Image 1: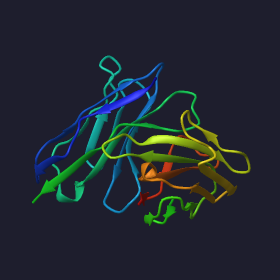
Image 2: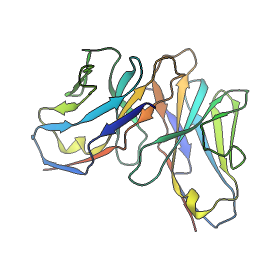
Image 3: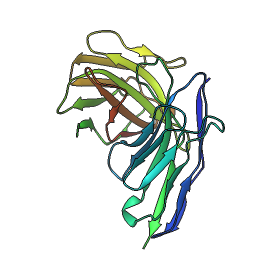
Amino acid sequence: GDSVTQMEGPVTLSEEAFLTINCTYTATGYPSLFWYVQYPGEGLQLLLKATKADDKGSNKGFEATYRKETTSFHLEKGSVQVSDSAVYFCALNPRGSQGNLIFGKGTKLSVKP
Amino acid sequence: GAVVSQHPSRVICKSGTSVKIECRSLDFQATTMFWYRQFPKQSLMLMATSNEGSKATYEQGVEKDKFLINHASLTLSTLTVTSAHPEDSSFYICSARRAGGNEKLFFGSGTQLSVL
């Protein structure tokens, strides 16, 4: 079945460091891909998404490119801030679904000043 | 942006009791709501999909008689864990899709259930 695999955390970085959180997926067809972020005490929020191959989603300095050839959707940010500390979830929405998502396990990011 | 309120955020109960978790869309109508469960170090797993005014659709392996879902209005869905046991201890989170909306989902902040 469809699945998402993302790198295990926790990830600890210093402020202004470069961030990569790897995400790969298994799916039939061409799913939509998402990154969600959950700040402490809050619900998941959509960070960015891509709906077809080679699309790049971007928001708040984060980017991820839909790579069909490597079935990947890695999250990157050039310079992280303390306020980026959160749990990040990679997810896919199989084509033709109602909108339910298949999630990875989440990666906790801690950014130190 | 759209807000989904989920209560309670944390609950501790004795084995054998029932626990109700509420999920409300505060500023939009949600025709579809989803309930997820996350065990420690595991993925968020979809438990069920509920559509307003109809019976919920449960994922394989989820007991519908144990996890009662009611979606009686366009702004409220409830999940009741009946006769909870320690193995039901988990993080439960709901999401809602706006009526007429696209793929975007709005999530509650989750409920941490601990059954003693």
